[in-house]
Length: 45
Image (cartoon, rainbow, N blue to C red; front, top):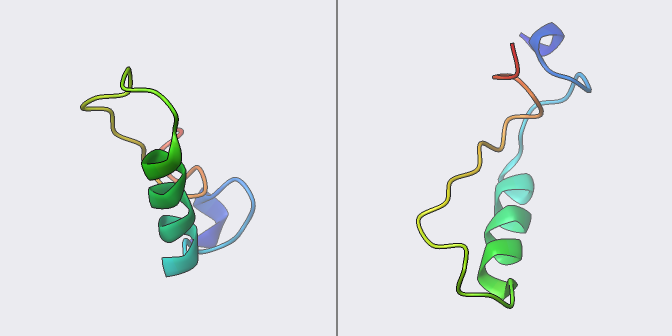
């Protein structure tokens, strides 16, 4: 499974939490309804 990722790592709960904090702290209202896949590049094919 890890060969499908960019860096050979699984996505952890900490990875997802960091992204959630990034979005929560972003100083703009312009990012409404955006999504971001936290997958270490698994879906980049």
